[in-house]
Image (tube, rainbow, N blue to C red; front, side, top):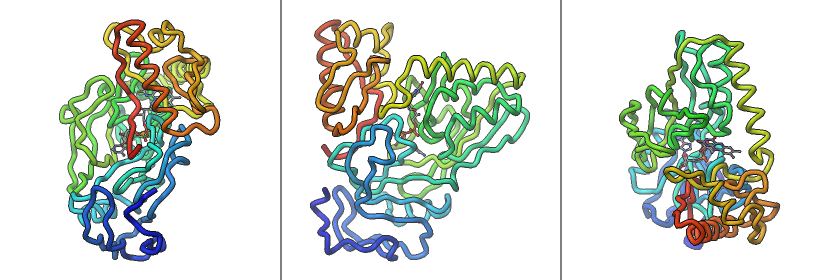
Length: 324
Ligand SMILES: Cc1cc2nc3c(=O)[nH]c(=O)nc-3n(C[C@H](O)[C@H](O)[C@H](O)COP(=O)(O)OP(=O)(O)OC[C@H]3O[C@@H](n4cnc5c(N)ncnc54)[C@H](O)[C@@H]3O)c2cc1C
């Protein structure tokens, strides 16, 4: 998996010091972690953290105790080691060769959701946006009901500009607190993120730790009804209970990806253990023991066949990370 770190070099978890070893694409200097309170794990399996339930290990997995801990840890990395945030893995393929550098996974310390005013909330980056949506609805804050249809975290939607039913994160996000890969703490406003369709300008390797949202006044019962409608529509139209990664491809301007995939005759198409969902053609699913390679290859087959059939080039929405 990680051929640059020999088993004998591997320390026990949380032993106080990272090994004096080279990690692919990273600093050769050791990273002292005295005083760091979070949990640092070498060669950590990631499949359990992603919806596809496939893929390799992180060279390092760091689960910080809190934002100060994450800041202190990143300062020591000094920007030399690749850093990647992992949310709840609902829009991600972790490749089978694993992820170089450090993967940051935020835990329950980052999952607090608080109503801060008549139309405002703040939420830790690990909070599921469905909870943000529910809390907003109960408090009579309208405009965030669409979050109920997205199974991601606050950090994930902030990065991806997650959205559905004609609304996106950019419509409700005020600003967010971010730790850059060298440990700098910055607050980025909505405009700084330069949102476009399923894209933000969040700097590479940075970690969102908290975000603030604003909606508009609404009636809790009406909002609740809208959320129920969204939830049942989703259950009808998406393979919610499957090992999947959400919409595989962005909708090309003027087209629906699922219609293009359907028109190419690919609904239900299988490649190894991976399959184009029978329920929603823009979803790929792991039917049981698919490797990430099979899932990604299936996506590429879909792209080729759709292009041959319609002349439209599909663009991946799912983030594909790590070594093949
Ligand atoms: C059944 C299903 C339905 C879905 N429906 C929708 C939908 O309607 N609309 C929609 O937009 N998406 C949808 N998705 C996709 C997914 O839920 C969103 O893209 C969501 O924003 C991803 O959040 P996550 O926490 O799972 O992020 P991950 O998949 O873990 O990561 C996605 C990206 O966000 C980054 N990231 C995650 N956390 C942080 C953080 N704290 N700081 C910085 N970067 C971070 C990761 O590095 C990665 O680049 C669906 C997925 C599934 C499985």
